[in-house]
Image 1 (cartoon, rainbow, N blue to C red):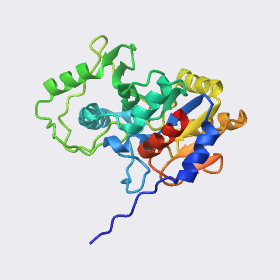
Image 2: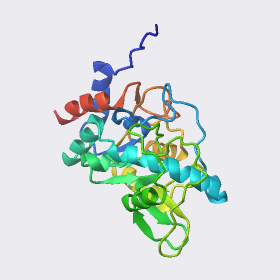
Image 3: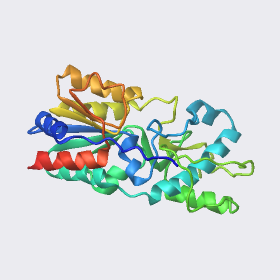
Image 4: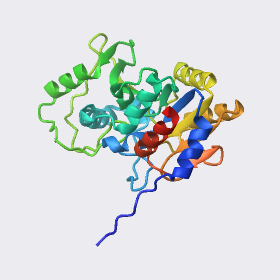
Length: 281
């Protein structure tokens, strides 16, 4: 019989120390996959996360069989994403922004939950699953319209109530040799969700927007990111060069632990809620 290991939580002393570093400052927030685990979306690198090799951008471009596999899994994953709801951590950040304490949220997530929670200034560093773009002519589509086309062209594709989804909106599927991949209705070109694949660069304008948020802030709060992706580390380094206080909240080690002024080994939802009560008090 297995024994559940208690999840780490921040102590009152740690929360007080974090509040002291952040209080009275305009805070830029960077969030990662750990932000959305309480909404039922898994983390790539968190404790217990299965080992997997996400499809790369090069594979997606290389052949129709890869696009069949990706679009089938992405469709099922998007349906699950679309049904996900913000957790308390998302709502807390929206409330802090409305109160003028947070100047915006930079997120590595593609699930759109910050916007659903009411955050107004969100930089989706790695894109969003809600939009689809043609790689040939640039035409964009709402994901819902593409989903309707996929289901009409693939009536055999089951839509289970529960699928195993990944943080990038993909799902594990097999037997997709007969899957019909959607094409651009304008030029017949290749369609791709507006997300940054593994092996693809963050758009220059997106990173510039994220950097501008950090430049305008007086502090940086990182929540739910292991900082394994280079774009997050670059934003942390920018904050350090500006000598901003940096508070990092994440379960388990991150690549930024040694650079942060304070690291809280704890979950995002409960920690942000406890921290918000101190900052707003």
